[in-house]
Image 1 (tube, rainbow, N blue to C red):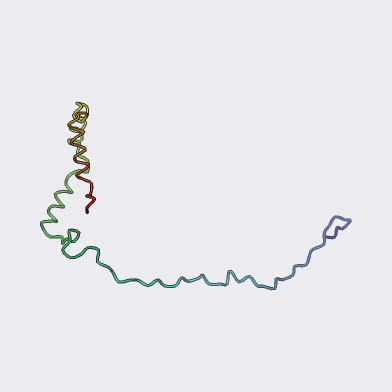
Image 2 (cartoon, rainbow, N blue to C red):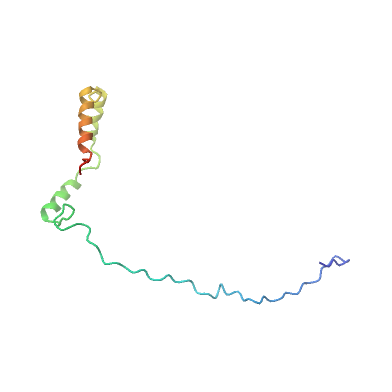
Length: 109
């Protein structure tokens, strides 16, 4: 580094780089196309998962959609039963235990 006594520094000549900046000129990389497999049926024919939208099913769905997601009358009954202590009995505990066990899949399955 050279220090001038006047305090003014001479301009430093810029030397062009030997490697051009090609990032802006490079096109964006293109990903290779991913092969698409043939569609696989989700449900086996005749299984419970397979259904056809029949007139009867459409009518049933329409009826179900008329009910609200939360039924205030059912919630009110449950609140009243909780307040009355209906669920704080040994019989209620036994009934709940039987329902939980029945809802679990069998080990043999």
